[in-house]
Image 1 (cartoon, rainbow, N blue to C red):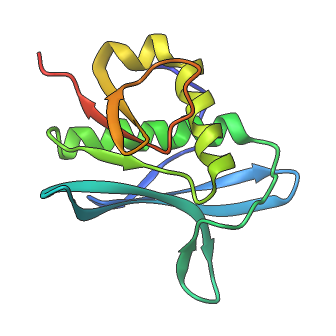
Image 2: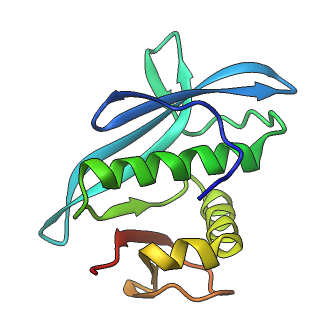
Amino acid sequence: MEWERYKLVKNTDYQYEFYSEGLRGRLKKIIEFQPMKYLGATVFNLAFGNWNEITRRLDDETRTNNGDQLKIFQTVAEAVINFFETVPNAFILIQGSTSARTRLYQMRIAGFWSKISQQYEIQGELNNEWSLFRMNVNYKRFLIYKKIK
């Protein structure tokens, strides 16, 4: 997948960083794959946000409006692809910090569906039930994993 994206730096097997450059300047972004138990299995929560220099933590609630949303999404997608190279059997849980952000993720997934669906399965949770991703359905969160070949 050839997309315009930022240079991604892999800090650890589970953490990546890059810098967003746009209207608000140069901002450090962090992507973490946080292992957690979900329904008796280990899944990796995809945490994404700005790096807060004061708290020395990822902040997933701040809106920066740096004018580069698509390029950021494509960079996060590249981190997901890279993570699957490290942990090929992983299940990644994706949910925005707000319902609006989750909806934004859904729109981006739908926009790249023809490329994503070739290699990955995505399920969406709706009313506490999981099903294969469908266009125009508003999900609470998503689970992505590599297709078995």
